[in-house]
Image (cartoon, rainbow, N blue to C red):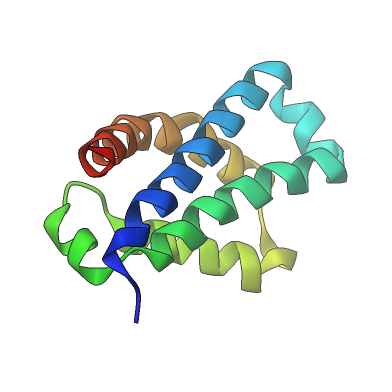
Length: 116
């Protein structure tokens, strides 16, 4: 059973991964990341971390915070982990450019809420 008290730590892991992705996205272009397997899988890993931490959030927390589509994030994690051979660089990059910045303020607010 997942412990509700650990949700704050999981949110911190999500926030750390988001911040790393956003910082590193500014350092590298899509073409560089897409053609360098070490960089590419570094980006993949941070998206996986977000998905794994979301997966480990309690059902109660997720049910109380429906502004985020947790199932989509968890589903992305499953694809990245189990379908690693099918990862399309453009889809990953679009997630990092479009979805991660939208997710960040929600995670920041939830983290502050639970850190009190």
